[in-house]
Length: 215
Image (cartoon, rainbow, N blue to C red):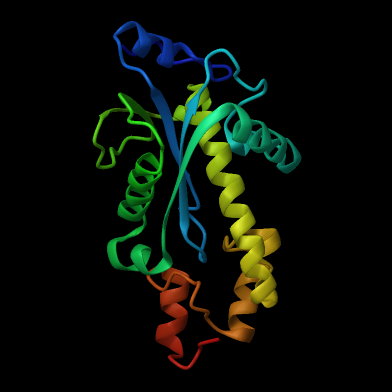
């Protein structure tokens, strides 16, 4: 059921192979936000309409913000979408990998229809009530996973922009919570917020050095 690794753009071959074995519907599942110092991790599950796939779907990291936003809007009309999050508190309690898998589980559960197969980006399988298949670098191989990567990325970026309005000192509208030099300097100046991942080494180290650093 697994076609050869494609070196170019993602295609629909994994999904078609699943359809031939009576696995339908099929969703692509991906997450965004494993690396940042702040904010939740987001995941998306996307079921594409084989007759109306938006052109230009690709790994979200290979697309401009403008292109991601345009594809996000198109997918809202032409695909079935589920979104899930794992909070900063959950990330700190269970580690980022487990929290990412939890967000994926929640994204699949948020779909309005029951899946037959979930195509998961990466090597780790979340808990699912359907068959699952992991695909290494799946967002560059499967159109459904590419779509999920776009939905997860845009959803999380928008959330971080909203948080930036509440906490303007950290530049989250620009860095989306990632550990930039400006973000690190802002932490030294303003301290740690409730949206920072305290289990992440730079934040944990700062808190250990000065337990009074809270925003």
